[in-house]
Amino acid sequence: MALFNLKSSTFVAIFLFILLSSTNSVASVALERRDNPQSVSCDSSCTSLVYHDCNAAFYNLPFEGEHKMLRGNGVISDSSDYGTCRVKVNCKDTTSVSAGRLLNKDGQTPGFTMLANTCTSQGQPGTTWVDANCYIQTVLVPAYS
Image (tube, rainbow, N blue to C red; front, side, top):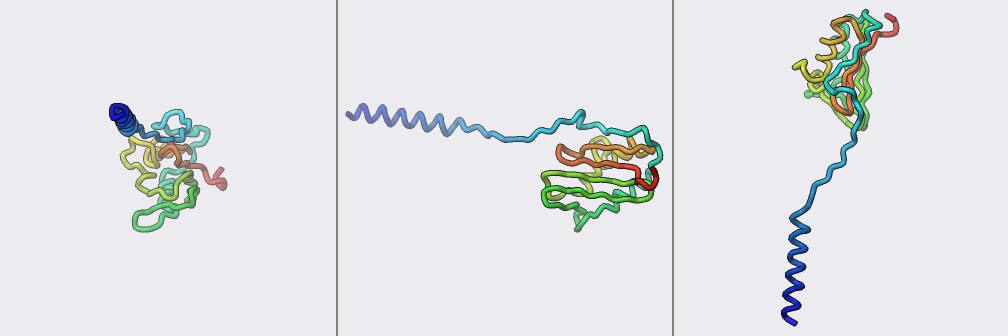
């Protein structure tokens, strides 16, 4: 009988060892289709945006606090007009995003800086994704259409 108990306890020990040592972390990630995450989409049918107006509109967005954050209840949807330009920021599934994150000042990764250098500098409206849930868009203010 002792031999049977030894085999049972060995089996249980091996089973528990395998169960506990082979845990795999599984993450669920929502994927969203985008053509090229590094791309900026410009609208060449319009060439009357003023570069300075878009910069001023961006800095007039309702940033709050010392870290200059846009805040929302799970969705951020803000816009600001200045002169010829309206800057729109739309972020879903988030409660805050910083001005620095939206700018991406290096000009190499998507952000307002890349959008301004690629589209607005040519007078064109455009859109770029900052990340999978957040995009920035420049459009011509309707009064100037």
